[in-house]
Length: 211
Image (tube, rainbow, N blue to C red; front, side):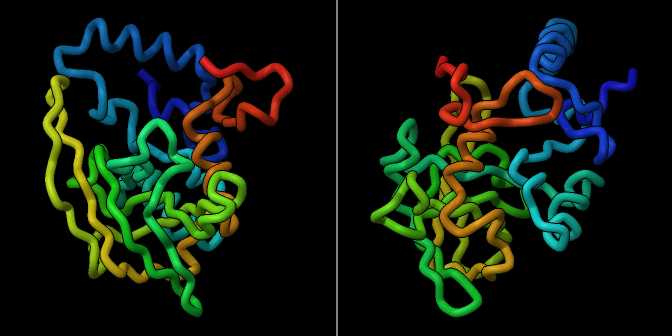
């Protein structure tokens, strides 16, 4: 039917659709599908929006393999004491030479059990926090110190994971965007506008409103 990678920009082989046409397609498929719609990747690989902000070298390692269906990412922001307020996260990433050491816990992480990498939000500056103190990392889930601790069954039939990070070494080359710029990517990924394949930060637009 030509319904493939709906929100992926056309330059990467996707349909480049905005929010409204995607909602219409999702609603109609959900009405007719005999299986639950959520999380089935009916329209191709799930591509985390932040991956489009990778540098060219990272696109070869992360973005393109995801687009080809060879690699899967999950997203880890929520913590036991930081859900609706991500600025309160405690997972710490401390730089040590050309790598970061990460310690902390993430909870309710969908698809962690079937993913290769996690797009991890971690605190790199406790003083700045949401104002330049949160960084986005691509972390290999097979790294030493990464443990999928337990699952949390839900009424929707899903069972998201709790992930423990204990002295996990992550190369500085795996920082997505700038150090301290993770909160920008976090907000832009969770609050998309209706233009094709793009995202924005709500407070950057004079007409933006939270819902």
